[in-house]
Image 1 (tube, protein in one colour):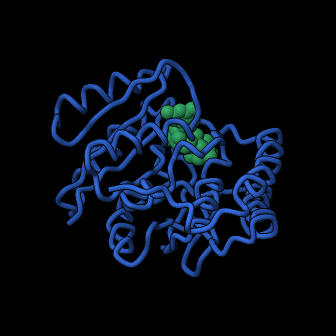
Image 2 (cartoon, rainbow, N blue to C red; image 1 turned 30 degrees about the vertical axis):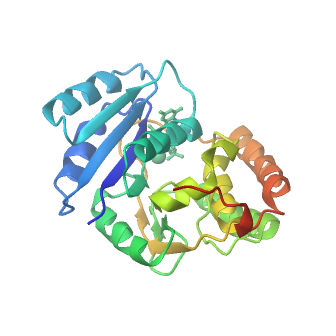
Length: 249
Ligand SMILES: Nc1nc2c(ncn2[C@@H]2O[C@H](COP(=O)(O)OP(=O)(O)OP(=O)(O)O)[C@@H](O)[C@H]2O)c(=O)[nH]1
Ligand SMILES: [Mg+2]
């Protein structure tokens, strides 16, 4: 089994983080650790994370950042932390149980046959929470299947999903310093960068649940920014090829 780290960014996940950590630690995956990247959550998530890390000093780690700095930089910081410490499989997932911890072993298994794995809502067997409004469904479908499909010509079905597993070599070869976007486009950008560099994705169907606790902050402004962000991503990477992979030992 590869040495595995799951990066979990948190902002106000006090109601979720303890249950998530215990669910991940009780999985039948022998060498799995967790890195929580907390942005000084006002609800005290960082304190809870610290106490979890104190209880499991070999398996739970925390990075505290000064304030809300966005999901993208949280992932990048977590990925770098993992690479510096020799992790071989590096995962990412949300803290709010939209991503089911029980799916982690399936994602990890798929990493045997791909450079990266996406827990996908838009392949056969993948599903969205029934409670999602028709509006939000339409938006997500349009973003993934129409907009990103059209602009980036991406063969990946779920380009915005945040439940993923990366091989160490893939993250090293991408040169993470290239990545610029920080919000929802971050997932699209890192996917497109990997695709242009010739890395192969496997998509594993998942059921995506709505967050159980806490409030959603999805709005039209965020959507518009994301739509424009996709155009920038295309402009930045469209002429990259596998020859431009970063060299590493
Ligand atoms: N460190 C950090 N984590 C963040 C930030 N924004 C969101 N997160 C975390 O990133 C994960 C995904 O964010 P969510 O707020 O669930 O985003 P979403 O699923 O699109 O929207 P919801 O409908 O609200 O669930 C969660 O674990 C959040 O706590 C941030 O700025 N910094
Ligand atoms: Mg969520």
